Length: 112
Image (cartoon, rainbow, N blue to C red; front, side):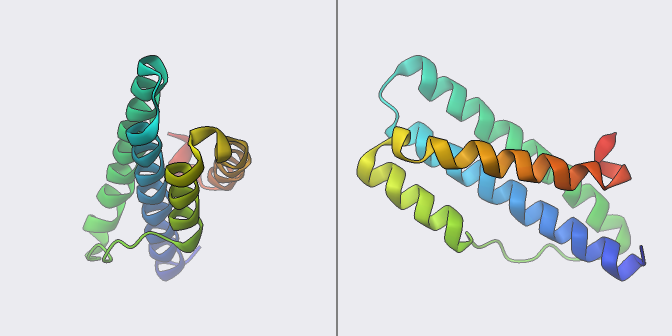
């Protein structure tokens, strides 16, 4: 993979992790069960830490971080969670997490 492709992949990974963090935090905001709220908060924190990993890969390459914007999927899921509750979006999250984990399987730096 060329440096340009690698950098683009790092940026995409960073964006994905930031979107996931925002989604889990939004779910935590509307979750009424204190135990589940805590789980979602921790998941948001974990995803945020994952984004720091990709930030650390971008900085040595001299790449500025892109301006973060929620993608359409995350905006939609947050809207649905706020409108209809966390249970309305949870069936959509697990497949997205599985897809992301398979994507990382193809990236040696993500395995560490």
